[in-house]
Image (tube, rainbow, N blue to C red; front, top):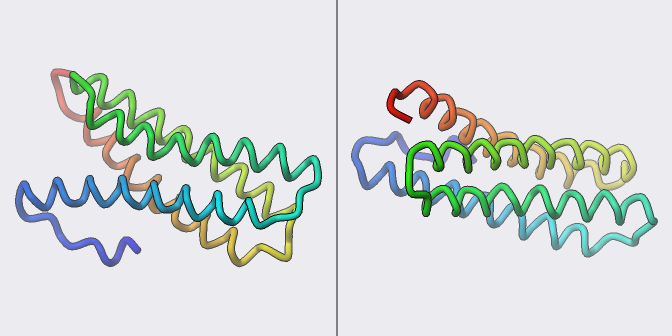
Amino acid sequence: MLDQIPKIKNQNQVKNSKTELKYRAFYLSINIIRFLESLSYKQSTKIISDQLIRSITSVGANIVEAKASSSKKEFLNYFQISLKSANEAKYWLAMLKELLPEETEKILKFTKEIEEISKIIGSSVLTMKGKKNL
């Protein structure tokens, strides 16, 4: 999906790439929730699913909060929280992959997308940290 993002050339494209990140996180959350709801639960997968839902929805929620922040420092903080949530989601997806080998293909697709989203968020965090006057 990253190969579909056009090169950023002007201010409108910067806004569009940030909006795209928000929507990617949103739809990844929706798709994971739908997937989890289709599973037949054992106690272990229920607990892991609950944790995964919390972490994956936190990614997009913190991106949205960042847009409403009142300072660059606050913006950076929300993006860092979003990145931590993305890393946590990867952990829960890895656990599900081991517990549900029959669902490996779907889980790997989710993992690939959250890894791409993480790279974008991480790059934004590094860019913001590199700027003075936070």
